[in-house]
Length: 296
Image (cartoon, rainbow, N blue to C red; front, side, top):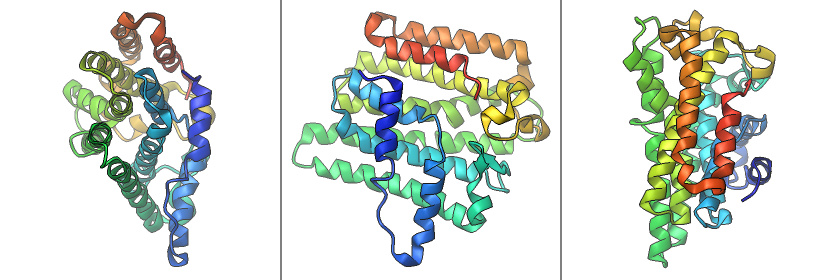
C-alpha cells in the first residue's frame, strides 16, 4: 500500500481530469467548480477509497474515477453548506467561499455540476465494463454505495436534520442522527466502495464498515469540539458558529469532557474492528489515530 500523502498526490494530480469540457457560454461554471476543488483539503475520503481498494487487492487505477467523484460530491456539499441560506460562511480552507467569489447563483450551479458530474463519471465507469459482468457488478455496487450514502437517507438527510435542528432543544438522538448521516456516511461510503471495487468478501466489508462508522462519528465529534476551542487560522474558517447558531451538536448536548471521552472511545473501537488483520491494517489504524488528534 501507498502512504496517505502518495494517495493524496495521485488524487490531486487527476482531480479535474474527469470534469467534462463546457461550452464557452458556461465557462464560468467549470471555473467555479475547479475553484472549490483545488483550494486545498485533506482529501480524506478519496484517499480512503483508494486505500480500501488497494487493501482488498484491487486496481487503484480503476478506483481513481470513483475517488475523484467522491471528492466532487464532498466539495459540492461544502459549497452549498457555505451559502447564506445554510451556514453563511465567508471562508473555506482559508480562502473566500465559492459564493463570495462567483455569487450565490453560480455557487449553487457549481455544486449541482459537481454532483451531476460525479454521477456521470461513475455510471460511465459501470458502462465501460458492460462486457465483463463480474467487474461490472463491482463497479455498479460501488457507484450505488456512494450515491445512496450521499443521498436523502445519508448525507443530505443528515444535513437536513442539522439545519432544522438550529435553535431546537438539545437532543441526543438528533445529534446521533446528524453524526451518522451528515458526516459518517460520507466516510463509510468510500471505504465500502473501495472494498467493493477490490472484490472484498463479506467479512472484510463488515469489519471495515464498523471501522468507518466509528471513525466517521469520531470525525464529526472532533469537528464539534474544534468549533468550540479550535484555532480559526488553522481550521480556515470562523469558529464558534455552532454555538451562535444554536446547532444541536455533541458538545452542546453532552459537554466538552464527554465529547473528548467519546472521541477516544470511538477511535479505540474503530481500531479494534480491524484487529483481525494485524499489521496489514496499519494504514487504517494509524489514520484513525491521526484523525483523533487533528487540529483542523
